[in-house]
Amino acid sequence: MPDSDAQPPRPIRVSVVEDDASLRENLRHFLRLASDLQLVSEHDTAEAALRELPDLRPDVVLMDINLPGMSGIECVRRLKARLPEVQVLMVTVYDDGDRVFKALLAGANGYLLKASIASDIVPAVREVVRGGAPLNSFIARKVVQFFQQRPPEPKDDAGLTAREREVLELLAKGLTYKAIGAQLGISLDTVRRHCHHIYGKMHVASRTEAVVRYLEG
Image (cartoon, rainbow, N blue to C red; front, side, top):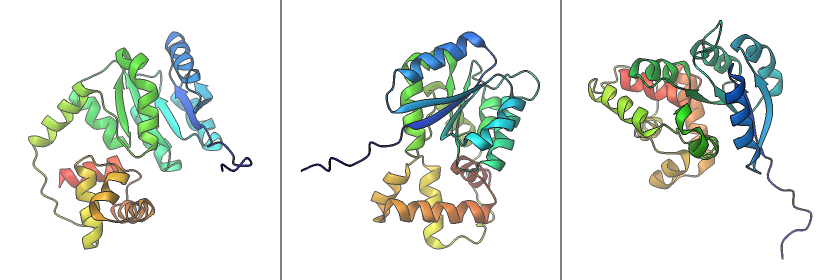
C-alpha cells in the first residue's frame, strides 16, 4: 500500500540566460508545460547570471552563447567554478565545431540548436540531470569527427586508480552514470563517488571537462 505521506519528487530547477526576449518567452512556455520542471529565474546577460545564480542554485542552466558583453562560453566557465554541480546546456544558433569544442571545454554538459528547442529542450533537461550529455545529432557528429582526428593518447593519469580509469574511459564513450554502474557491477552512488574523485584529481569541474582533457591526451 503506498505511503500517503510520501512527498512528490522535487521539480528540476531551471534558469535561463538569454538576451532575446522572444526566445526567453518560448523557453518559458515549453518549460512550464512540463510538470517536473520549475523555471526559477531568467537573465538577459552573463554578468547578471553570475551575480544571481550562485544564490539561486538551479539544477540546470540554459545558456545562450552570443550574449551581449561577456559571452556565454566565458559565463559557463566562471559559473562552473562557483557551482560545479550545476548542469549547463548551451542553446544557440551556432553549429560550428570550434564553438562546440570551446563550450564543452568551458564545462557545458550539452549543446542544442535553437531550431530544435520545441522538441528537444524538455527531454534534454531531464537527460542532463540523469547524468547524460545531450547533443544535437549534427553537433554530436562534429564532436566525434573532431576527436577522431585526434586519437586519445592520455599522457598523465592524474594518479587515478585502476577503477577510476575504467570509469573515465566509459565516461569518454558517452555512457551515463547508471550505464557505467551496470557495466562495472557497482551502484550509482559508487559511480558518483568515483567521478567526484576523478574530477578532483584532474582539477576539473564536470564530466565534460574530464572527458575533453582525457581525449586531448
